[in-house]
Image (cartoon, rainbow, N blue to C red; front, top):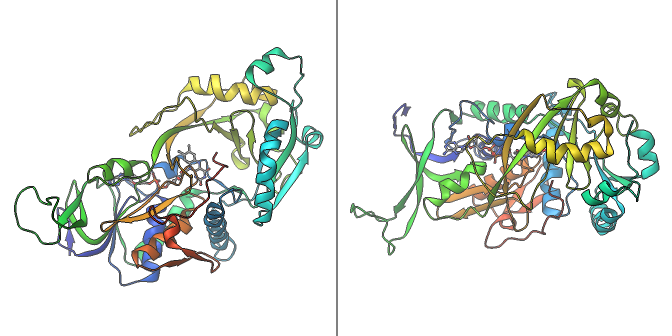
Length: 435
Ligand SMILES: Cc1cc2nc3c(=O)[nH]c(=O)nc-3n(C[C@H](O)[C@H](O)[C@H](O)COP(=O)(O)OP(=O)(O)OC[C@H]3O[C@@H](n4cnc5c(N)ncnc54)[C@H](O)[C@@H]3O)c2cc1C
């Protein structure tokens, strides 16, 4: 029985983190074994307030790694099922993703396009001329004598690549679903409780201080929070960007590094014609569009009349982790806005009315998630900026791992060999499409 301050319950599973991954994991663990005693511990006051709340909330199946594709495809199918069949409004809208391609990018993309098409990804190629007609006010052709454009590395957009089974979703709605179901299945979620450390103990305790000594077999037995010691058969770390800090304390490598990512919300009458571009989808809005160079993206929020814009900055930006990262106005002014304004002059005088920042937990090796087991601990990290769109599949793989099954059943019945996301027996292709 649990009472604040003293937890004498012998839990089967303690999960650190009530983000989308932690809650999807709890949901699938309980779905496969309703008798399992699961407790989720979250330092925030409510669910999904970590990087899940910072997400741009795009969903896409356009990945070059077959595993990433499978994880996102089946998760998107599950979210669609919840919305279409069970009537839950997850704000899932298939508005598409649109990559604007220069001839240089097109050359790089061609084999990738073929690879994705062979993998069954539905794609549509637009000619540059068509795009110029469809995108109101766009200036997609760059004059070769334009010195400034040359210095800044701009060249003409020659094609557009649209991913069809792509769009946007409300992560808070997905989190709400998992949270409700976990409670209905008698899972316990404790908010406002921070895990301070992971309990690592020898199998045969001697009662001496300094245990475990190196010659003792040891494994993880739970966690210590700022309120209680929580003992469990299995400990799951789904703490997103915070996982590294936690795992470091017991010498387990998270295999991820965190990078700050910033988002800026913009709106204004001058953007409306672009926002409500016709011809790409039945919603009559611009798809989530990625603009060269530098992978600046703009995500349409049709009903709010705004865009969220940001950029996937890699080289030259440090790996850092901050408890509360802050978006920088200067980053918008000198990095995001010049690119958008160049191709879409309607952005020239547009300033953000809101901004925020979070972290990507980057798997710098192959940009596929990890679900790995280490000494009584299971870790789910490394979503690399696409954890919302893969969370359901990651939760299922986590649950299969927890039940010591070799295969997880993804939504739609596909079987997935759990060890493919492990560290030791990893079997994934490096991802080329990280945004
Ligand atoms: C700017 C930005 C844009 C993004 N855009 C997209 C997108 O378009 N599509 C997409 O699919 N993904 C996107 N992502 C990535 C996505 O948000 C993440 O992959 C996903 O939210 C990760 O979920 P999580 O549950 O692992 O982490 P989180 O949501 O961060 O959850 C971890 C939880 O653990 C809790 N926690 C941490 N430490 C402790 C502790 N010691 N004790 C107790 N609790 C703890 C935290 O409070 C947090 O709630 C984006 C991310 C960012 C930052």
